[in-house]
Image 1 (cartoon, helix red, strand yellow):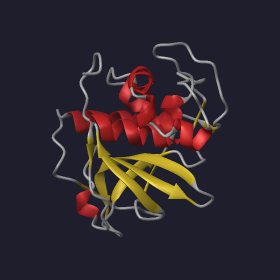
Image 2 (cartoon, helix red, strand yellow; image 1 turned 45 degrees about the vertical axis):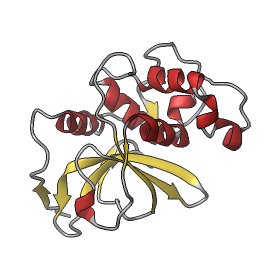
Image 3 (tube, helix red, strand yellow; image 1 turned 90 degrees about the vertical axis):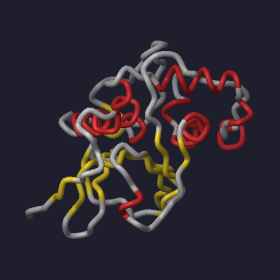
Length: 194
C-alpha cells in the first residue's frame, strides 16, 4: 500500500513546532511495547524503561527531547493547584504522585489548558497545526493523546498524528477516528515553569 503525504506549509523548519514534530517522528523509530504499568520513577527526568510506554509517553519523550520535563512541570503545578486537576474526582487521590501524574491524559489536558493554549475542537483538518496536541476518548472511556504532524495524508486531507494506541509509536491518519476531547498548543521553553 502506498500512502501519499503532502508537506504542510505552516511549520517553519526552525520553529518549536517543527522541533516537536521531529522529536515525535523520531519516537516512531523505537520498538516500544504498550504497557501502562505503574513504575517508581526517578525525579526529575524519570522515565519508564525505553522499550515500554503508552500514548502519554510519546508526548513526554518528545518534549523531553527538547529539554522540557513534563514530569516536573505537571508535578509542580499539581502540587501547587491540586484542586484544579481531576485526580481526586477520577482516581480518588488525595495528593500528587510524581511517578504517574504526568502519564495520565486528563492531567495533561488540565496542564496544557492552564499553561498552553486550549483550542477549539473542530471537524476541519486545517484547524490542526503541526505540533498541536489532540486528545480523544477511545471506546471503553479510555483517554488518548497524540501530536499533530507537519504532513497531510493526500487521500483524506487529514494531518498525520504521532501516537501510541497499542502497537508502539506510529504516524497514522487517525485524527477523526475517535471523538476528539481536546486540542492544545504548548510551545514551552526549556527551564522552570513560569
